[in-house]
Every structure is written in structure tokens, then in C-alpha cells.
Amino acid sequence: MSSIPEYMTTKHRECDAFFSEAEAAVADKNWSLALAKWQLFASELTEHLAQEEDTLFPQFEQATGMTAGPTQVMRMEHQQMRALVQSLDNALAAKDKDEYLGLSETLMVMMQQHNMKEEMMLYPMMAQHLSNGDQLIEGFKANVAV
Amino acid sequence: MNMSGLSFNALPPIDLPFRFFLSAPLFIIACALLVLFSGETLWLSRWQPTMLALTHGFTLGFLTMVMMGALLQLLPVIGGIGIAKPRLIATTSHALYCVGVIALMLSFVLASNWLTLAALVLLSLGLSIYLGAIIWVLVKKISQGDSINCFRLAITSLVILLLLGILLLANRAGINVSFITLDKHVTDFHALMGLVGWAGILIIAVSFQVLPMFHVAPNMPKYIRQYLGVSIFVLLIVYIFYTEFALGLIFISHGVFSFTLLSVINQRKRKVPDTSIKYWQLAAGTLLLMNLLYFLPDRFYVSEETPLFISLPDKSILLTAVFIYFYLLSVIQGMLLKILPFLSYTHLQQRCLIDFSAMQFIPHMHEFLNKKHGLMLYYLHILSGLSLLAVIFEPSLYIVFALCLLVEFVWLLVLMVRCMRLYFTVSQKINLSNPP
Figure (cartoon, chains in turn yellow, blue):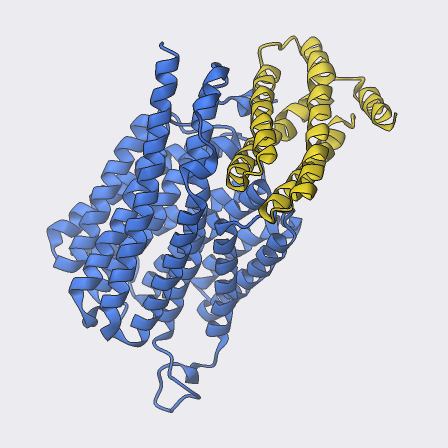
């Protein structure tokens, strides 16, 4: 049994929380709070995506031999999410509330769909195929602590 | 492990759900005209043929139409698998179903045997094709979950509803059905299966998915997800034998659902103003109000004695109208406000997985459906809902109701057309940027 699904799912929820706080702050036009929360979200997201792309996905691909499968699609979706994050950065810098809220609704829906696929399919598959799952997660936790 | 769950090609082409959505407001617009030209007599009893045309226009023409379109799209997202041959199935079932509903409405108004038979054949054919395809997906081993189980119950209710409808229509057309007495109890059961079984359980199933997904709300408690749908379904069956007992518990179950809805909505993390949330809150409030109305002593309703303040109209008409208009229609409209931009965006976004540079052409979700326009729909909905209540108390106000309906659903149609037009414009741009 591996803690991959548990840990990675918790991270999704943490991202959602920061994201929602930033969005609510924008809706209230509290730009300084919005920026603070948004930066928390952005750094959590960057770290999470890196953990997947640099560690979990390659390990999974190696263990299963599936290089053109689900991980490939997840990488492409990550790329799209990064593009939206960039647009949100710009909207926040320009203090453009309507643009920000339109983009945030979009990123939210994209992330939720993406997370659902990972949580329902990919993470359980990883737990099944990666015997060193616990070690990998311990490594993530240690890195965060540093 | 089922790998197809991660496949993105399971989404049916967007014009298939879109055509169900687009036809739906047209039926309500037809209903509005019917109200406008039928006058006061329409509101005398639920057995008025025109009233039957009206209720079926709302429930089949709008509610079921939207739900059929949405299910085509929801199954792949939630269950990881879509129906086989989607274009063939959706096109034929949609065409047969639309003509069938028109024939049914006309058959009530014109009392024509020929039209009744046409409705019977067209509706059973159209729905059977659709149901066949959906049931094929639901019995296959797809991702399990509480929502999928509720979908199964909702679809089962639709099957029962359809069979009873066929019997009732056959009886109307003069075909003698000897093994069952088609009395008021059967019609009540038919109506209840439609409103509470098919539409109601489907909405419950959808709420399990969309509240966490769109609003970052916590999941509903496990006992609600596991037992609410199945309890309501069992109560519907119990209703056949113990009418009053089952009905009371059905109302109470919806009261429980309402409290759960309100609590989950209240705990959502995404607090940004949102019209769909307003629709959910309105729907939850409606369920509570319905409990109050249902358990109110009969002396408050039309009776010989003078009630406390004003006498309420016929209880079943009032409760049915409130349930359809303020509960079912509210949730469906709230969902449409999310689904229309969501579908448009998702379809375009998936094309850009391969051609990343085309991402620049895709508008964000509020450009597909402007938030202020959505909010306007909500206010129009409340206004026409209030005018419906007014007309139930005072039938001479039917013109107000008809006009409110007309405005609301023309507006909904406009929002849909705008969203779809933007979709096709952007799709064209992506095509041009990336010639095949």
C-alpha cells in the first residue's frame, strides 16, 4: 500500500483552498490579499506539477512501460494549466476583476476535471505499480520541510 | 484497471448535446403561447386536456430534453465511457422524441385519436433508442460510484414512467388494456415517477458531483450519497400500496436533502458570487417550503370553512407547480449556466492538447456566458415563478404568466445561441490555424 493517492489528493485540496481564497479576494477587490493568496497557490501548484512530472510520471512510465498513455495526456493538460496561470498573473497585475474571474472559473473547471482523472485513475494505478511509493512521498515531504 | 477512463475521445461531438439543449426552450415558448391562447379555463383542474399538454410540454419538452442532452455528456465525464454510435443514436432519438412530444401535446389539445397513436409510437421509439444506448453503458462495468448508482435508479424510473405512459396513451387511443385498472392512482404514480424518480433522483445524483467540482464544496455525507437515492426509489414503489405514508416520507426525504444541500453550499470554499449557487439555494428553500405546504392541515386549502387568512388553491396543483417550477426548473437552469460554457470550453481545450498554440483563440468561460446575463435569467425565473403562483390563485392573471414565461425562455434561448455561436466561431479559427 502506498500513500501516493492520499498525499497527492491532499495537495489538490490545498491548492483549491488557496485558489478559492485568492478568487474571493479579487471579487472583493482586495488586491493585496489576492496577490498573497495567489502566490501561495502558484507556488503550491508549481511544486505539485514538478513532483508529478519529474518524479512520479517517469517512475510510473518506467514501471508500466506506458509512455504515451495517461501521463502524456496529464503533461499536456499541465501545459494548458500553466498557460492559464500566466493569463491570470497578467489579469491580477492589471487589476482586471472581470477578466480574472472569467479566467479563474476556467482554470477551476479545468483543474477539477484534471484532478478527478488523477484521483480516480492515475494515482490508484501508481499505488499499484510503484513499490517505492512511500519512499517517494517521504522524499517530497522532506523537500518541503527544508 | 480500466484505462478507457482516461480517454478523452469518449466525449460525444458537441452538436449532439447542443441540439437537445436548443430544442428545450422552444417547447416552453410553445407552452407560453398555449397559456396565452387557452384563457382561464386551463387552470380549472389538472385533468384539463390543455393542462396535460402544458405539464408534458414542461416535463418532457424541457426538463427531460435537457436531461437527455446532459446525460450524453455526463456519462463520459463521470463514468469514463460514452454511448456507442453517439451521432446515430442522438440524432434519431432526438428527432423522434421532439416530434413525439409535439404530437402528444397536440393530441391533448385536439383530442385526436390519430395524434395519440402517433405520440405513442414516436415517444416509445425515440425514448427506447435513447434508453437502450444509455442502459448499455450503465450495465457495463464503468467506474463505480454513488452518482452512477443514482443514475441507474433515475433511468429505471424513466423506464417505468415510459411504460405507464404507453399504457395510459393506449387506453386513451381506445386500445383496451385488461391487466391493469388505469385510474387516478396510476396517473399519480406515473407523475410521481417522472417528477421524483426520474428528474428528482437524477438531480440528487448530479448534485453529488457538481457541488464539489464547480464550487469546491465538501462531499455530501456518505450516508446521504449511499442511501438517499435508493430510499426515495423504494418509497416510490411503496407508494403503490401505501399512498399517504410513502408520500409523507418522500417529502421528508427531500427535506433532508434540502438541509444537506444548504449545509454543503454553506461550507463551500469558493465564495465568489455565482448564479448557479443562487439557483441551488432557491431549489433547497423550495423543498423546505414544500414540506410546510404538504404538512399544512387540509383546512388551509380550499374548503367550506373559512381558513385563517386566504384559502390556498388545490393542494396537488400547487405542490406540483412549485416542485416543477421552483425546484426542478431552477436546478436545471442553474446547471445549464454551468454546462453551456463548460462544454464549449472543454471541447475546444481538448483540441488544443495537440495544437497548443491554438489555446490563444479560446475565450474564457464568462465570455461564453456572461455572468450578468446569467443573473438576469435567474431574476426572470423568479418573476415568472411568482406569476405562476399568482395565476394558480387567480386564473384571470394568465396573460401575465404567459408573457413572463415567454420573456424568460426567449432569453434562455438567446444565451444558448450566443454561446454556441461563439463556440463555432472559435472552432473555425482553430481549424484555419491548423489546416488538416
